[in-house]
Amino acid sequence: MKKYFIFFMFCFFSLTIFANSTIQKVRMNNNPPQLVFDISATTKPKFNSNYDEYNRLLFLEVEKVKMGSKFNPSKFIGKSIEKIDFIDYGSNVGFFIKLKKGAGHKVYSLSKPYRIVVDLKPTISSKKEFTITIDAGHGGKDPGAIGFKKYQEKDIALAVAKKLQSKLSKDFNIVMTRSSDTFIKLSERSRIANKNKADLFISLHLNASKNATAQGMEIFYFSKKSSPYAEKIASYENSFGEKYGEKTGSIAQIMGELSYNKNMEKSITVAKPLNTSMANRLKMRDRGIYGANFAVLRGFNGPGILVELGFITNQSDVAKLSKEANQNIMADELASKIRAFFY
Image (cartoon, rainbow, N blue to C red; front, side, top):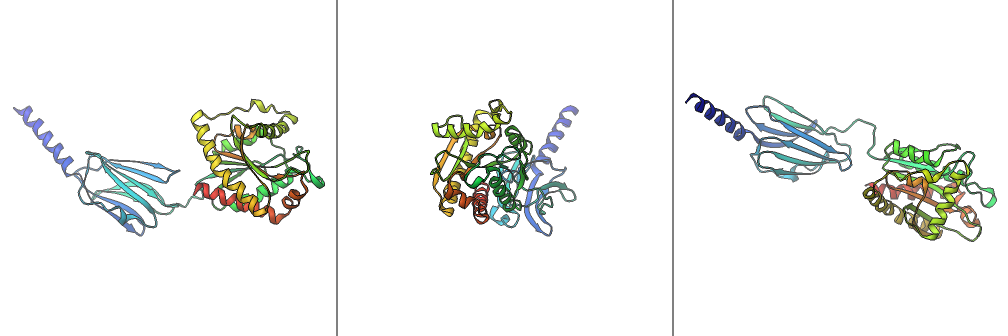
């Protein structure tokens, strides 16, 4: 009889605890900014939280509780919260909180009374959300293509790269494969981007042709399949690695098939509007975008593009590419389309 009584009392108290664990109110504090969950319970409530940095989505799950009041998501949208939803799982309640850029997400509990608090104070970290690697083609002992009036590809590529760095550094973590006239192997360029976990790889180059009338801008993304023309351009750029002692064929594609397809899709999203906008602003020929097996793109584990800013062997293109004002326009368009891609 005593055993049954003890078992009955255990069940009674367990049910009482679960029944009394209620989120009575969800409210906002303004100073400091906090999202507060007031909980009525006989024991300290347990919770789990996870944060998806890419989507700025905080998931908070409170265990063994029920909602004790109506929840109006629109009340919480403001300076710190972009969107909030909740799901009642029966025994647990989950909240999906999309934070605005710069909002904090420290989660902790308090007692007397029980509360779970999401501290939304702006982050003081200087770390920015996304990282971009800017790769100025060639450099040092490798001049790249030498064109009209002896202009060298490496010099113009670096000039535009540094201007792009300046225009993006306020909003992004920028990693330069080179910031001066130095030689960097093709494999090292993608290694730098991978090491820094870059979200996008931008490689800047100038095209060349034996036909001095060939002109215009074009952009390439990594593809295992390519047109005869794109294959020819990729072979030309890859040949510089071979020329300076690097076996570019040994640079492996490190991404899996799903990542490869997704990264190709993202790369096209950046490339298509960018080439058209740059060509229009500088009144240069828009030669389109192509998929090709570039070694420098093949070794990067993420979306990337190789931009041929124009033909260094064409008098009209060089006249535009060599002017600082036009280099600023190119950097402006690159920065604008990169921001549009991320935000």
